[in-house]
Each structure stands twice: as structure tokens, then as C-alpha cells.
Image 1 (tube, each protein chain N blue to C red):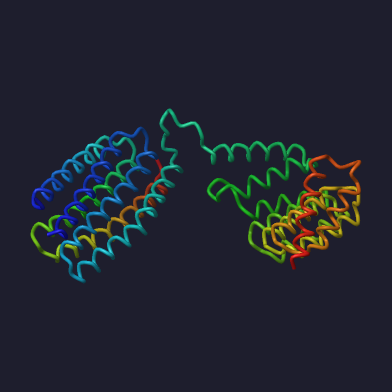
Image 2 (image 1 turned 135 degrees about the vertical axis):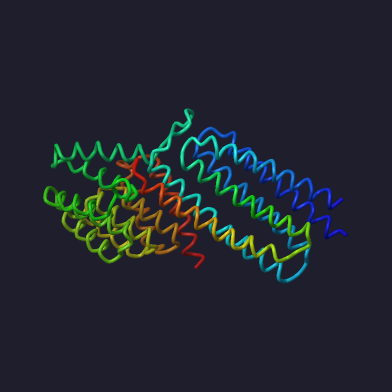
Length: 286
Length: 87
């Protein structure tokens, strides 16, 4: 008796969700909102109905069949909706009037603008760097591709050796090719004697790949070249704090910031002194 | 009690199908019709499941399995058609 009651409630709820989905497809203003509304509601509705059926019959075969349908539905409904929405976007189906943001279109326009600016002035490496960033983020259907980005990076290398190598390394890092990215970023660092931009690119690359010790080695080399730059020791402190490594080097970095107190902003000093206390306590604890 | 609930659910299904058909006729674009058709198939699957309960016949669920497979293939091929269509 109670089982029949539960299954009846589940089936009624499921068909209510189906009704909500159909009201959504009729009332919502444009194709994309309809799409997003009906896929969720209809998936939940059909799932509830099938669950109610399998509870009512209470046979292993029925459970298996409705399990197959529900699993298949959860897999295929989002894929189908995504495919149709993607095709509709490519066919430029209209938005409703209240839509204000289209990030893909904005990025596409920005990339086109940057490309024009870059073609007019190939010596401007900053524009080229932004262009490469935009091209990496765009999907292939809107002109984004890694090989095009690499071509632009090669052009930059002709103008400015270090910047070109750094950008090439960043592209390879986005592509997931660890060794090539490491090679190019290292060459970029050596080419410009560990300038802050190149060193931070390499350090961030190591941090993303969870290799704090190598990142700290790079910072140590960079600090030998640029002893007056206080951003390197601060970055080293943060890495040592996040990954819980190398107390000794971190304390040294704190000391260096405190020694140069005349040049350091007050914010750096504050962070250095509080982190130093933390590192000292941690090394005593060990 | 349970019979009443089942009847109400079937009526709700019928109303929803009617609303979806209205959207199917109104359009305005081809992707709208394709999604309406997709939703309609999902509702047919749910109705088959409810009918299998009303007639106490488990075999109808096989139809539901096959229909859910065909609905997915239909949605994908329609998406491919929309993508390749020239107008």
C-alpha cells in the first residue's frame, strides 16, 4: 500500500515537471533560454516517472530497464542539447532583446581588432602578446588555433628574442606539453638575464605544475641578478607558505625584505614580518 | 487513489504535449522545432512508462528504451544538419 502511494507521488511529480518544461518551451523569449529550461526539467521529470514505475512493479527486470533508460538519458540529453545549441549559435539564431552579454563574440571582435593593429605595427610586442592570449582562448570555429598562435610567437621572436620565447613557452604550457614549455621559458629567462616578467612566467608555470622547489630555485637565481627587486622574495614566501617547503630560504627572503625597509612599501614589510614569525615557529616545531 | 493520480498524470502529459506542439508549429526557427521535437519524444517515453503501469504490462518499457536511443540519434543528426545547412 505504502509502496503504491510513493510511486504515485513520484509519477505525479514527474509529470508536473514535464508540464513545467512545456510551459517553459512555450513562454520563454528566445531559443537559448528555452533550450536551457527544457533540458533540465524534462530530464528530471522522466527520471522521476521511471523511478516511480520501477518502485511500483518491484521486479529486477523493470529496475534494470528503467536504470538503463535513466543512465542513457543523463548521458545523452545534455550532449544533444549542447550539439543543437552549438549549431544554432553558428547559424546566428537571434537572442531575445534583453540579452546583453556575448563573451565569445566580444573576444572574437577583440582578436580581430588586435590582429589588424598588429599587422600595421609588427614591432609592438604588447599588442602581439594580447593577440596570442585571445587566440588561445577562442574555440577553433572562431579562428582560434595553437599553430596560428605559435606562428605569431615566431614573428615576435624575430623582433624581441626573450618575449617571443616567453610567449612560445606559455602557449606550449596551455597545450599541455611540459618539456617544450619548460625549455622555452628557461631560454627566455636566460636570454634577458632573469627579467621579472620572464622569471615570473617560469615560476608561475612551475607553481601550476606543483613543482615548488624548482620555482624557488628560479627565484633564487633571479634574486642574484636583481637584488633590489622585492617582488621575488615576496613571491618565494608565498610559494613556501602554500606548499609548506623550504623554511630556511623563506626566512632568508623575509630578512632580505626587512633589511631593505627603506625601499619597501609598508605592506611588504608587514607581510614579511608576520610570515617570518610563522616560518620560525614552523621550523622550531619540526 | 492511485488510479486517480495516474489519470491526472496522463492528463498533465497530454496538456504538456499540446503546448509543445504549439511551439513546434510556431517555430520561428529550425532549432526551435528540433528542440520541441526532442521534448515531445521525451514526453512520449514518459507516457509509455505510465501506460505500462496502467495496463500492468512490463514489456512496454522495451519500447521506451529503444525510443530514448532513437531520440538521441535524431537530435544529433538534426544538429549536424543545422550545422551544414546553407540558406
